[in-house]
Image (cartoon, rainbow, N blue to C red):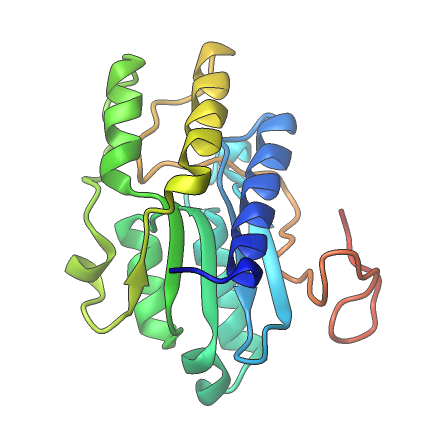
Length: 196
């Protein structure tokens, strides 16, 4: 069972997914949390610009490789609105990040998109542990699943762009993976203002 602190991080993931949707992107959001519970970085989907690799989980993996020691990465948790696609699961495994907690599974997302008539993505969705078997994974989280489903329904009813599935996500030009600190903090870990 997840703690209230963990549910707070997952709710932030849903907020980030909403931010992505509100900016015209596919609704996915992720938060990287250190072993002590400190929010290190967060991001949302940014694939609307045309780069289909701009998933938040991938951005957080890259950010962690540049900013954290191997020990810090291994002790960190990635909270996310949707289960990692194979690309993001591989990045997570390669940089040595720790646990993953997701709201909605790739299987759930694929079923929802199928109900909406969305064409399959060019990459087959796989469970995280099929790609990165050493990663501890928890999810789905039923308390928030309906909210994530509603975001995807909203995106696709609004005429979502390119064909999507559990592996296709959205993006804008500037990554917020460099955002760090608490959710309401105005600076990143280096003291620079966070961009929104």
